[in-house]
Length: 108
Image (cartoon, rainbow, N blue to C red; front, side):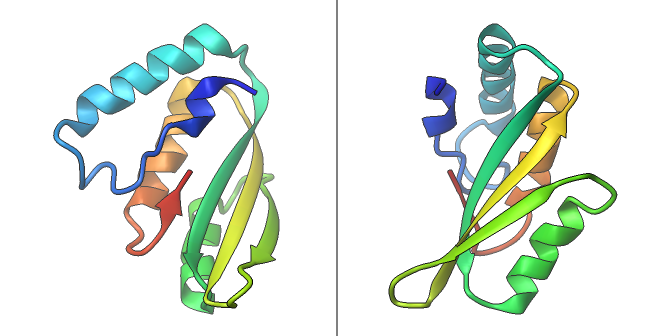
């Protein structure tokens, strides 16, 4: 597993000191480590409610994304794994940026 998958991009683009630099660096690392097109795995943690899930699902509308869910032991949170065939690093970053707009979602 490539080390870039451990980058915490929570609160990007609204958080962080310079999200533009973060995404540029992330894109360079993706292009150095991966060959596209490829299946890419996104992981998110969100409060367990239908609205948050619906918002994430809308981000991936019109794609062939596959979703897997796991509730936390307390039942307050759900982790979502999204598998999607992406054409390039720009597409990977596009979906991260779209999910980052959803309040309360943690991206891993």
